[in-house]
Image 1 (cartoon, rainbow, N blue to C red):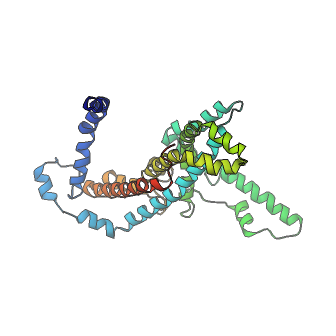
Image 2: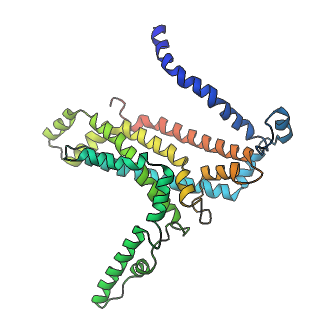
Image 3: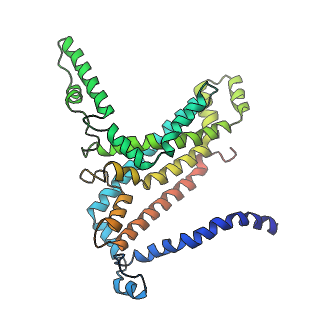
Length: 320
């Protein structure tokens, strides 16, 4: 039995060795730096740590830092909106593509392409798509507003203010603080939905067709089969997808950095971007403060992951 338990460890050794050699050291160092005022320019030794030791001062600064508060709530808003949107759209796509249609493999590949595209390329693409003057989204909205306004005028009616606004201006997706985060969310969902769809598709194809056939024989319609058969059997996959999407949402950085840089007026500033700016975007560098932000983010993610892992027993069908 002991030999059986030792056998899997042989496969874990390469990853474990890499983690101990290249990850554990930086992780422990960042924990230490979160208690130190360190600029990253001096040699990191015992004398530097003693000289810059500030204890919990970096964490106290976080409590009084309005920019950190703004980034924190922006991150929560992003996760609360982007993750459910991504999960629901991915599930609908997986249900639609889990059929023997002609060309379905091509469509699956097409939806997956944004996932394997560079995040910088995705960000630059969506900066053009959401451009308020020449972007396709606002051009379409402007066209729609003009045509619907003309239809109102045709019947001698005054068009609503919303249509007039669409025809003349439209949303400032990346320039208006009220719209900027929505622009980032649109790009993020477009880029990430393909991977979630692929995971859902694997889960759907793993469901035994006999369950669906038995439900059909019992008189269940399509919605009943979905909610009472497919969704419970898909719950482990749904749990995995939700967990991964949540963790990825809290770590969003590349799209925000490329599309808005955190602006306008910090309306898209998120925790990872603020961490980066404190570590490398100011001089002298604030490595200690950035490390404190990183550990707050880690503790938040750990707590939410633990909560989800605990609650999974209530809705995840383990036998699936």
